[in-house]
Image 1 (cartoon, rainbow, N blue to C red):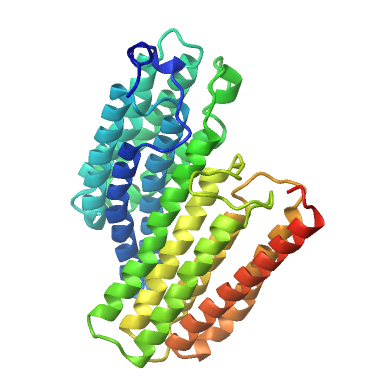
Image 2 (cartoon, rainbow, N blue to C red; image 1 turned 180 degrees about the vertical axis):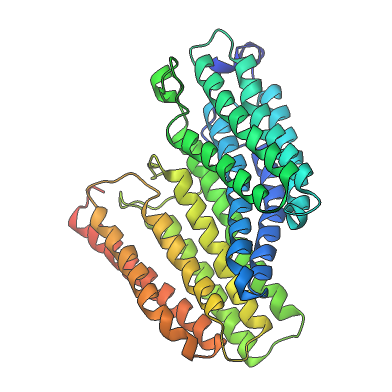
Length: 399
């Protein structure tokens, strides 16, 4: 419980706790459903006519990035100010309900539910900085919240315009709107005469421990998708030789992702669930986008192999099965700040190279063999990464 004096202090004077709150875990429940919806869209993209594959995949990437924007900005908010405050809890709960609406509308967002999707997204993305602009009046960071609000108001015009126009125009308007938001976040929302000073220059401290723990929790939610997709695919027809092999491969992939994510730390220390031992890079949120996107692709790929293990395999499915780990490894290698032990990242880079080189030949193998080989390569990358970890610790025992 917060002390009474702490509760009545201004929002700008509050500080985020080192650990995530229960409400933030509740917020992530919606993303279990949202990621399942996105995985369903990826699976649908693999079954459509090939001449429309790129446009459909582009829509899925747009939705995934938009949902990630909401989550990452909320994680940053709760890692900057105290999420135990009733006003911030109200914001988180409202965002949670809005995200649920977005997840429900995903299958028809480029169809008849486009207006609902766009309006809900705009309310979330404009409502958050609008609340902060009101709550932080008189605080030095007030101008920063106004800058964020201005950028999201600009993108909201394009979101609504795209919802009204429909067709190709919807995709163009929404892509530009999302690009504006991502550029704004990457450049700390600069404006003429208001500058582009980041939060830390305004006397506001972002709790790295809190934010790292939130990233860890979101990663675990994404990792569950591999288990859900593979388990659900096996459950319907029951165990078969091909399904069993792919299920084992899925389990190996899950363990490899977990091991690389939590133990590939450039400082030589393991990343605990509380985020200790991690110094996040400036682009950490974008790294998480690649990590989670890669896991979802891998989950869908293994699930598709279990459902249809008979050759020949499709090139698009090969791209999903091998492209997922590639995205994960690239994202993981850029998650943390650079340090004196950066050569450890070479293991992940060589892993990316191995996956890219081997992938084209996979169209000659049965789907089950492709899934199994992807898992074997991931396991080998994990083994070499842990070997490099051990050598780094022995070379520099102070780590």
